[in-house]
Length: 488
Image (tube, rainbow, N blue to C red; front, side):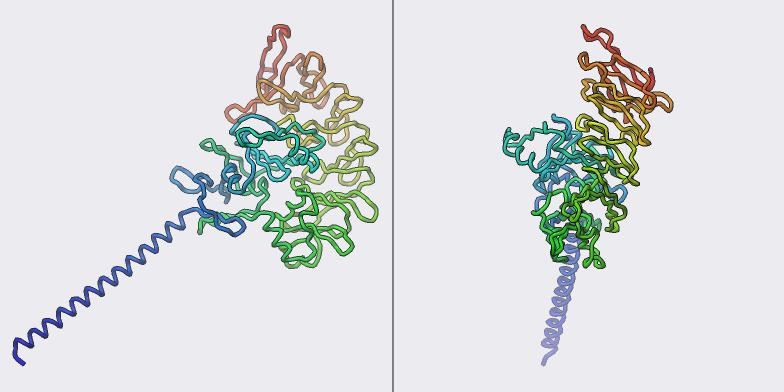
């Protein structure tokens, strides 16, 4: 072999080595590029909000479903994210309306959603939401007779008899927000209003929502005594949010059982000895009727511990809790009403035609029976007066109505706190013919202002201001408006 041949062989070998090194470098580069792309895609995927409903991924999630700050990051307060009520309504196929239940109109700072026969109202900058529950009979009538279709959107006639509605009030830890013409509510407020279980995983940027139907299926997989929700009112189905459900024994008696606590799967939260059970979510109580003697009782539930903590039995025709602390109860005896406490002591004897105000007329009432945690409105012989929670009569029944429900100038009110130092005011209609109201000392009944056409409230700069309109000249509709707290 000549020297030239050897050089050619060495050259070819060096050439192949260079090609091999180049290929190896290219492969390493492609691998690194692939890793970078995978990391990028994974990171980008993590940033994209995902929503699961009953474990199923949802596509085409609307922008604005979750409240974000100017930097595009999800707003989180007190470990809670905020979700658009309207956009979630669309996602869950719920009906959504502007304005709260008590008001018709297009006020976008307030809204209501309808689920089954429940209407939940959200009010911007408020830490309260309330539900109106329409009974099944009225719901059926409403669907047949009281709906109309305008621009393919169903409008509901809310002029339903008050006796056919029930109200529940809830106090939130955080206010409802109104941002860029959209109402956002915290996870707790969403769970309460939409009757779902919801959680947010910040690491996976995923919202998981579980409906009552899903939870019912889960419950039935855990216990064989679960009663199907088709056998009872929707109001009881909400127990599923708290890991409980209506159960039935072999004799057909009803109770409540846990499906999430492994130690309670073979026992009961409330024993199976009732012919009727009704769950009130806001007061955390069960109104029950015993099977053996038809007695009406109220059971107070610890929803976290899934146990009955207190109970009260009544010998009256009916009994209903009137506060969220299991302290006071409305009783009915021979179509007259009174109040007892948790020990069964009579606070107000059942002598009255009505107790409590018409809560449908007011936006700031959280308890129709006990105003400001102290005052109990009563109606006797068609006239209204006032008692306190100790059973002391403060104002004799003598007025034609209580409160100023309709106001053109602001929100009508029943109660005016702190009119003067340590003095609260109560509003009565004393001249129905001329629609004249009076403001009275809630403790003594003393007149504080009369000849009023309106007593109303306005939210100004975040503060509640109360006003009265004195009638100067009724014929010419001349009134004089003053601020109750600063000008009286």
